[in-house]
Image (cartoon, rainbow, N blue to C red):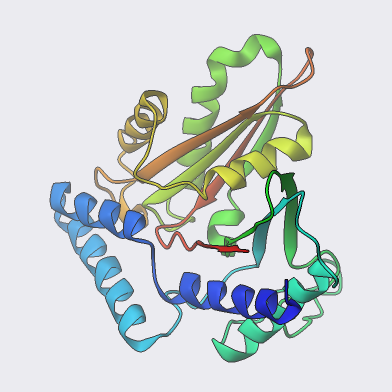
Length: 272
């Protein structure tokens, strides 16, 4: 596999994610507009849909907060690479930042010095997984600060399984309009402290139209809170809820919630 192919793929994935939304996301936004009954909420959803149309027409980012680069890479065990994959991905992020362009958001956590190109220590955030075959699957998930900042993680006790829904509703109620609802919510249950957070993020890569009965039920519970689009009231607080689970220690029950705003930006490509 050619190194330049990876660089260009990462750049093009960020361009696609930042300037357009997937058909699955747009479908849920339009459905919410049709079903919303509150006047202010309906106007907010109309503005959101119009914003998406303008971004796609002009090729400009959907939101001024183009987020922090989060990338998931699935590698087939039979794939052979003759170059530094992480370095190629980083170059793709630098190129995307310059060409799209993306707002440089990556800063040192203490000095707040900006790298200027969305890279730095452990940045971009890259998650590698090994699977079967000889393909490479790259998914990008830009995360804006408004939604990321209200994400939560709680190390619950095994006896608190019945309180997971309570934790979810409490978290959404605390967040209110900060994550720019209507939201998409990734929930990671199990694993470890850090593993549950990764599960919550990974859950957001799914086709957002496909929810289990349990996920639909949690979504409806959230919508009953009445927070609504942009936190100004209405029946549409969440567009979707997605759960990923992993086995965990017998004495643990990690639960992580990763919020995503209405601008659910994601894109995937498979390289052979």
